[in-house]
Image 1: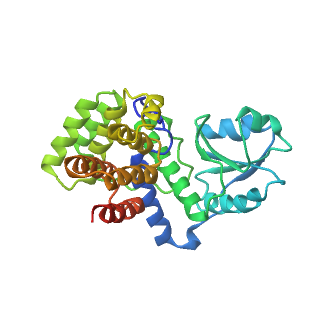
Image 2 (image 1 turned 60 degrees about the vertical axis):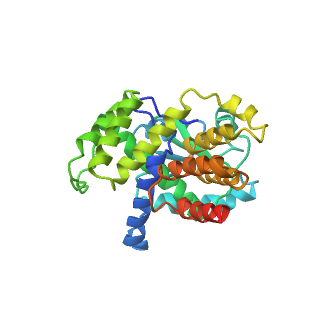
Length: 312
């Protein structure tokens, strides 16, 4: 499960707030068109160059590590996709390619069980990844969420942001942050979830349509519900199909790990087999999970349709 409580953490690299930034990045990229894409740095990594080309570089820029093999058909499918989507970032990420046949010690150190495997390395740590061949759209979504989480890390730790290159355009200044939003974010960094909830509620009382506050409140409630939960115990409880609370906790844990569609599907399945007050409780829990995502998130539209079908 992702660590949301440690200040300065990457929140497991792909957290719920990053999904909003990912969607915004996708919109900007589509508006800019294909001419906006530029080739990113791509480097072939060996055991001798791994520290310099991956670990050291990851201290200032996320490194997408493509662990591939000429013997794996999936590598031939995935590697060109990675080169394309990382290239579209225009140098904001590095693609590092490792032939695991030629550099087996890297694969062993990273505990790679199959190829292709893709890992994102940031600040010297593997923060997220996947092991299957994904279509380009899903790879883009994964990478956008990673970059959104990296940006959140730098917002929380401005001193860690690398200096802009000479001649690079400055980021436009945005409107000043709402003081209650700042207070909520500071409370989260301090691990004071109750104070964060109060700050988000104050903001929503003044601005009921504020999406950042809505998402923040839902996310903090999600974290608070699961802060003392033992995932292994939840897994054992799932063996009892009548344990509705276990199903809801399992969905909460899936949300925090980034498995949003799985969480929604789990709760909708419970809606289908319940009735009366119990069904209403499960439905309200699902609506609370919906609030943790930006309104334009594609997972929401799909889940809302599935919920309507389950109810009617």
